[in-house]
Image (cartoon, rainbow, N blue to C red):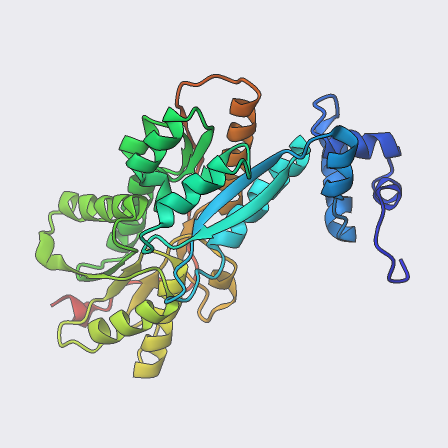
Length: 350
């Protein structure tokens, strides 16, 4: 390419299709075969091609915009992948529909957080909102948006929010249950649990599934010690340090996301524990870091990009008149067993 910015003609040549076909794909035209659509998107990704949205808006007289609202606390480090995974998925759906995606960061702790989101709507800065946790469970915010007739799509909403707006999620309770069953099957009977951000309802569902599995195995609450984290690497380091140096340290440590699990691994290595010989550590999300950390992390595959894609697609359908009745789509998850989970040592079960 000689350093030149790729063009639509370059995409067409690499994909082996006509220029008009590329245009149809990027504008969300449904009359394109899936195999052709996939070739075009692969060429777009390989070339790093971007659509000139300003040119498109000038030609069409209007710029169509959706906003992805994410929580951002300047006092805490960000989740390593969750936000970017959602953004990548939503961006693909928006590209298919021929519209633009903007990301709006809002601090949940800021008193004006909800007002900032409503201000974005009032200023007509977008035509629909994708709300992520914890905003996807802010019933007052969702009710305000509904009263304005403004389209909303929620990622990982809790039960109450699911009755008010379209949403997409996995079965969080079932996922937490499966993770616990995996460890119980390896003989573990003493657990630590690092919880997610307070008020994060989907993370609480994971914890409920974990507790249900232990109860069905005949274990009472004394079989686990839970600590409140906040999804960050740092909280994983600090909380795991305390749990793993206790006299009754757990043989298995369950973390509400991979960032905390990686922090827990860091602490276990620093203490000198063997993983999984002395302690099994498991996470949640199956983010890219889970495969490159040592040992590779056992975790729940959380299809983050699929959540972003589906939420954006549902929002586009709503804007185009696809109905107002709230519905929730459940996307599949799976347990990914790697090297951080193993049989409980017999001496640890006394």
